[in-house]
Image 1: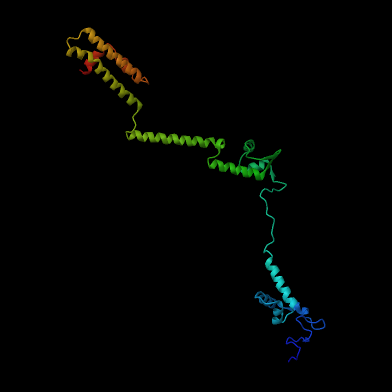
Image 2: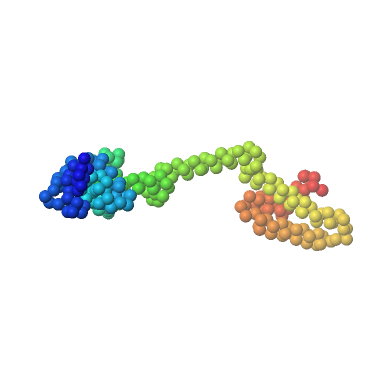
Amino acid sequence: MTGAGERDCGISVSANSYRGIPPPFEWNRNHMAKGYSDELRQQVIAFIEEGHTVRQAAEKFNVSPSFAAKSHKKHVDQAAQPLLPEQDPVEDDEQPENAAEITAADLAEILGVSKRAISDYVERGIIVKTGRNRFDLRKSVQLYCEHLRGIAAGRGGDNVDALATERARLAREQADQAAMRNAAMRKELVPIAEVRNEWVSIARRVRNVMMAVPSRCRQMLPHLTTFDVDLIDEEIRTALTELGEKDDDDGSGDHAAGSLGSPDAATETEALGVD
């Protein structure tokens, strides 16, 4: 039982002096703040978060107003703090003061090349040399990997392996040779010698026919004199000679063109049976 001016919590407070904060001579609830459980603390915080005042929370959960206020303030401050402390961004351009250096022998072993190749790569700018028999390991490995990627992608330029280029050229030549052989088997191609012989034969037949024209004219036109027939023969020979000189560029028809005006043309015509 509690009398007038006393609270049910067991702490006697004068009704005239109590205004939400206990008087100094009364029981001080702050002395018990450290004894409050975490569950009670969370309930007080949740109650204040719902929109109630600190005093209302203190009266409802029978705690001191300072405890309620400090608990809520601590909760708010923790929520405002980031989960992880901010760290300064690490710039990619920053490099350690003491970059890793390596000797030519060790670098050649790492890259799987000879020491002579290391010297060649230094001249071509693929390996970074920092001093006498000292090389920058990090930059050298990066540049060497970039060099290999360029070769694999066909962007190596002068750095492309000459042996690979020759192999590619040989493969193309072999492919062309196989294609020509297959075309010849399908009768799509004819040897040059056969073409030359055929055209020589055609030119010879044309020459024989043209050289037989004067004799035919003499038979069909008896009134023609010998001078007329010789003039016709001369003009035909001149025309055939000019035709042979213009069209026979490679000299394959020299035999046919040279024999267009030969004296024994009529004899050859009779032997071939052109007339």
